[in-house]
Image (cartoon, rainbow, N blue to C red; front, side):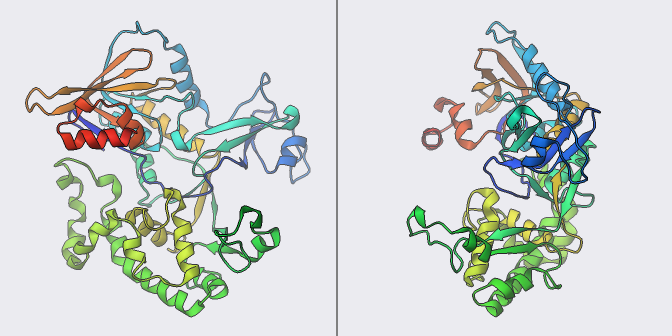
Length: 451
């Protein structure tokens, strides 16, 4: 996270183990009652009527009425900062230590940790709401009595608890912030290719019927997998070849055991892109010295997970499950980073494992990260679209380095130390000119990426 010395660093969002659908949908959220207390609203009908399970009737206020939402103060400050910023291109040039492009979890984590270590950090967000793929947006309920809050990214997290090596939890601990959660012990999965479900080769009119969805739905439980109600029981009840599925699952778990311990010995937060890596990974040295056999497998953590799973898993139901569990990356096992899946599949089946839904939604995670950023003097501004990453030759080496950004309104923000992009690789490429790259191959790569 540190040691960015006059270089362009492209950092996509930090790894957060998550489960949940990516498409926006109504979710259970906190509503503020007339007394200013946050109260969970549990269904569309309850949102419309204000009727809760205990029979108490509550009226929610919206729009011009008083509406206090839990954990929204940080986002309000971010919006106020951007609203006060002039949209004129005559804004004076600004100089900070580090400019972070994008306020996703990765950008805010980077900005907050840098701010804590004394770097003057400015996070620039193009949208009017911070959070990137972790932001939320409200929608008025029918009749105007209350509102729904939709999420555009992860809604359930694994690991944000004391003692976890989840990178998000590690960042929150560094910043001295917490996110209040509700815990769950699993979720329902639907096997869309199981018996009775439509084939991908069939026309869209042959989508599974509600009865078929019920027949192919099953409960995935976290926690010890060999106990009653654990994952191995689900395999015996739903796999096409139960005994093969259980045997292959156990082989995969054993294959991942040392890799998981290697993952834990050197958390992702310790990895960096300079010689400081030798210091931040030093605590892992005793583990690697006592387990030399794991060293040849360490590159698998940074490769596609199918390199680990494919030689072992052949049972169709188990293979579909693993592909489905990779959904957070947008890919099946082939294309999903090995470290992420080794972490998830290992953590999900430890004693005391649980899934956590942040109270207040994924926006509560963003609020906590913004609080941490601002606590140490960092700033975030929304509605500040970065048009160009400014690149100049390094005076000592002549190599190109990022020295700042130009906003869409023409304002220039210079960076003494670094520019960090939390945008996607494709969006980052659009902010760079071809002449910023040192050789023809790099310029060709940049050109193709930006198309």
